[in-house]
Image 1 (cartoon, rainbow, N blue to C red):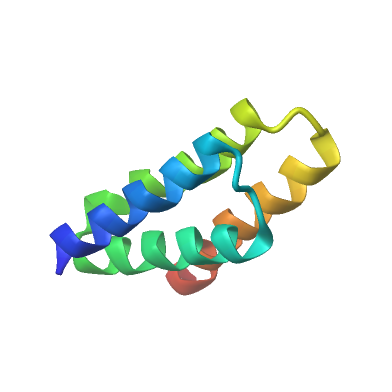
Image 2 (image 1 turned 60 degrees about the vertical axis):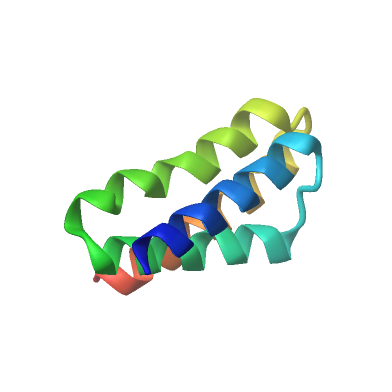
Length: 80
């Protein structure tokens, strides 16, 4: 299960890096990170991957702020 979730996270990050940056992808990445963190506690580090990638590749600050917060909010909600 961990391998499949890791591959799905890499697929989401690849789409973000290629320029496909939408709210559905941010939600999907957040859900995958939340599931990864539930399988292994040290996977919580992955929660920073998608928001950081949005910050690096999106030129419009208003867009990346919303998408980065969405992709980080889902895992944060599952941990509390």
